Figure 1 (tube, rainbow, N blue to C red):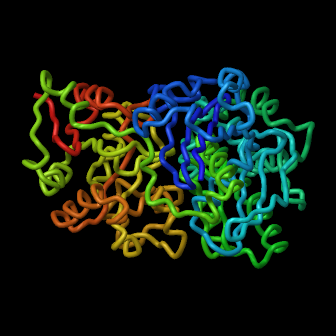
Figure 2 (cartoon, rainbow, N blue to C red; figure 1 turned 135 degrees about the horizontal axis):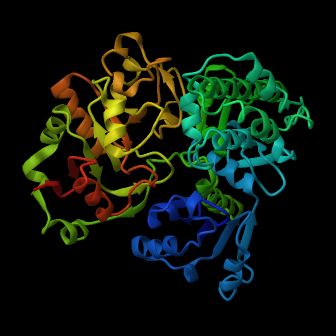
Figure 3 (cartoon, one colour; figure 1 turned 90 degrees about the horizontal axis):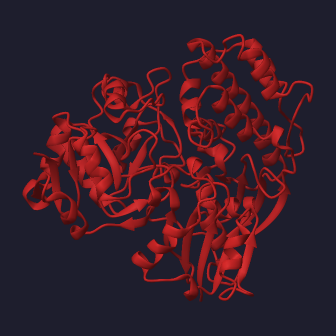
Length: 528
């Protein structure tokens, strides 16, 4: 039985994970601790992550039995800590970290395929693992150039559309739903990448390089400045991506027909519409996407790999929740509220009164427990609004100074999730808001603020009473008042920020009118 520190310390998404005796104690993402998105803070050392491990868990690096480093990583970190880890540093490849982060948190028994794909790696852009009851075998690595990475195409498109790579790819997903088929764009993107029949993606035409055509032809023609053409380009990228992944998965399933469960990881699978497409193929009985599917998931994957190697972790676990970051107590709030703000104890307000604030149209920031692991706010660092007003999308974007294209997400009581959304399978992954489903027709006009008005899809978070009691209580009380077991849930941050981790950050948003109330375990806070 051992204490393992896992690290992702490369160009972005620096993260520290701690696993003891096969149990996940915490995962601390540097961007949430610094308040700076990782794409703006490259090669950030895990300084604050290690500080929070000591504060939250009472552990220091010198206490660890093993240090699991996901590749690529900053070699200077090893040099600085060699006195403790001469023989205890274990390097785990980028995509093995991805695939095992998903498999070992999937809770899946029996035969499972674990697949990763993104824009980088040691030598590959993805891996395929055959897994069964805690054992696994790497059966394929995508040794392909960066120009053949589907995730790389999404990053490049994000840049050409004027957004920030490693931050705004989700905006391209949202934009795609507003587009239509354009044969010119479709043929061009198809000419850049294809599925080669050997579990790889390949660049189709080296004379037709994506950046070259986009920079020297489409940009001067105004393609990326025209509202409709931008959407059509994104639409065709989504279609080509789905076609490539479909060919890949059909081939994979034909080779391994007994494998009926699928785990997904890597930045490509932050695309919730792609995940819906895969789920709807009916190739697999269940799919699961790791909650931190991008590179912040590497640290945990590396640590879980070592835990499995040494016998601490014999089979996949099922996450109770994703609340694995830092927690703040009443004293932390007392330090920042008493001189500037109105506040009452939570006992005086109760869940019912919080629900009434939501029903009355107020924007409520919920800040309780430990910070979420991964890119989705799941009720501990969330902004909550009623879902019934069509105008909410524009109003909330303005209030938060955001430019979101994707609709805001619904958080739904588990007991009513199937009544509102067409959820036939893969409910576990929906607890982490990593997949879209169709909204049932009778609910489209009842919750327009959380449904994509073009295609009727939504990205629900299924809220379980035992796993997420605080958030479940809030939504339950709102349901009693409104008859709607759904709230709008977006992350507690303003434009350009990671999910907020500190009381001071949230107070700032209250003072600048981004939110109207803050709910903590101890207080309901508002402006004077």
